[in-house]
Image (cartoon, rainbow, N blue to C red):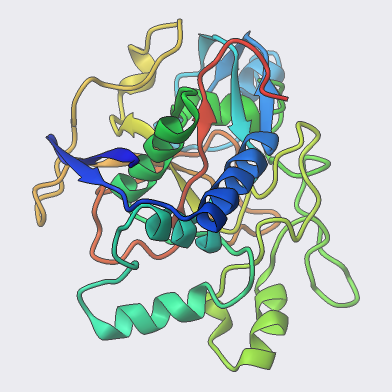
Length: 314
């Protein structure tokens, strides 16, 4: 039998997965093979993390007035691999099924109905909280023996910036392009893209997630780093972290720093954006947001995994 170690807060629980039939094992083997083939290698390197625009402009203006992404600071990362795509809702469902875990659900029926609408399109991102994202990546570790985990925010930014280059938006050409004729996105999803996709299924386009591979990848080979859902990373959120971050492989504070008064949970960092807009400081590679690890409904929150191994997987 497969033994899965599922983390819940600070407690560790051992869950025994069901015995797989030969066809199920074949499906699992194919799933793991595909996941590994979709990992993009990021060689070790050093980069200036944060709002790099003043440095890029030789002391000129920053890209944003946001203090959350400052000061820009040098970071040295060991090599790793990162998933080409966000976790899809089909992949997350498969993980739950093969692990003998209950189907995804929330405590309010209207939230379950909304989840179904958000993920109605094939290969759209999974809608998951931080703990579920972390468990998924750890499950991949248990299945492969490889060091799968959520990325640190330093790893995420390094990958989004095409291995640490001065890239402000993680699209194919570093910009957000929209067709003048249709207002549909050329390299990211606009509201009009969601409206077009939502019309045949009769749902609110404002809550629809688009397929993870709908638009071109970045030069590094990554999809959807600028839009289509904020992504959980490993780090606890600390607004002053950049001033004291270590240079070598930083992974954020050792424990929570800012507590949400309503829930008592400490905030985790999110990267990326849901619906960026050209001409606005949204969807930037160095922008940071945050939320509690277990929001009542993690709408718009998803993730992708990394593998912390020195050699390429492919």
